[in-house]
Image 1 (cartoon, helix red, strand yellow):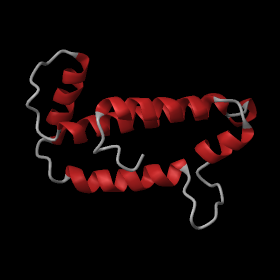
Image 2 (cartoon, helix red, strand yellow):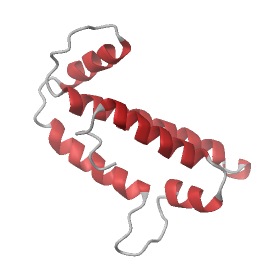
Image 3 (cartoon, helix red, strand yellow):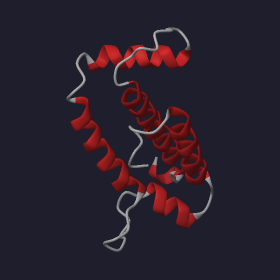
Length: 121
């Protein structure tokens, strides 16, 4: 997961699909480990939340090197949708990784919201 912005797009999709399915699975231990940002773990263990926070921090550092980030992200999204056929995009792996990361975080938020007890909504 830590190399999301360096891995091929297809591998990132497979990885996030597995984590999403595990997060949606109705099991209290999986739910706590994958969706509880306040879980107490031993010092050598990392939760999904801590990995995502670290990945976000590394991504913020890497995107400093990308000029016109908003336009490039938009073009990368268009490219993934097949609306733009320019494959010569610079930083394409990074941009695709950022898109997958954003969509994965949205999906985790939706899963956490759906699993939230009704009295807490």
